Image (cartoon, rainbow, N blue to C red):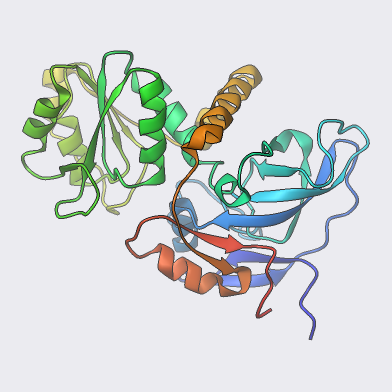
Length: 321
C-alpha cells in the first residue's frame, strides 16, 4: 500500500503517539502559503505535550511539533516576498506533519545562509533566550545565573548576554559532564565567588522543584527568578525568608504569551538580530540523531535520555509508512 500523501503525528493516550492521515492543503488563498515540512526537533515542550503535562491546552486533533522548518511550495497572489523554494519557520505549533497551509504572517523567512537542520531549532530557543534576558532585569555590568547549562536555551542565553555585557554563571547537576557550578547546597557561595563582585540580578530556572530555591538564594536584593521549565517534575519551592528579606520576585515565563505582548516592530527587530547571530555561527548546535517520521517513537525515546544535542525528525522521509 502506498503511503498517504499527507500524514501527521498526534498525541495518543498514556504518553503515546499516533499517526493520522491529514488532508492535503488546498491551494493557498491570497495571503497564504503551502509549506512542505522538512525537519523538526523533539523539543522538551513536545515531550510535555505527549505526556499531557504542557502548561496550555492543546488541540487533540492537531499534530504535535512546537517548531520546525519547511520549504514553500505555493504562494498566494498577495504574497510578494516569498517564492517556492524559500525556507520558512512556522510560528505556530503543529509541525510534525508533511504539509501545512499557513498564512504569510504566521511564518518567518529563513536566510539562505542558514542550514535547514539548524533552522529547524531556531523557532523556540533563541527567542526564549532573548525574551528571558529582556524580562530578567539584568543590564550591562550585571550577572545572571542559569541552570541546565547544557541546554540549547542556555547556549543562546550565553550568546545573547555577551552582546549585552551581562555575565552568565552556569549551573549543572552534580557530577554532570557539562561545564558549570554544581547545583548543590554550596551553590549560593560558589555563585557569589564566581560573580566577581558583579550584582547577581536574575536567575533563569528551567528545573523547578528545590532548584528554584537554590537559584533564588544566589540573588542580590530585588532580584528576579524566572521559572520557564519543569525538568524536575516538582513544584517550585522557595524559602519565604528570601522573598521577604531580599524582596525577590519569582514569576513564570512562557514564550508564546511573551511574544503575543510584543509589537510587530519589536518582534521583527528580535528576529533580525537572532538571524544575524545565527549567521555568525550562533546556530551551530549539536544534533544527536535524525530519524524519519515513521520512526518517531525511537526519536522520542532517545530525546528522553540524557545526551548532548537535539533529536530531529526528517518530516520529508516516509520510510516505513
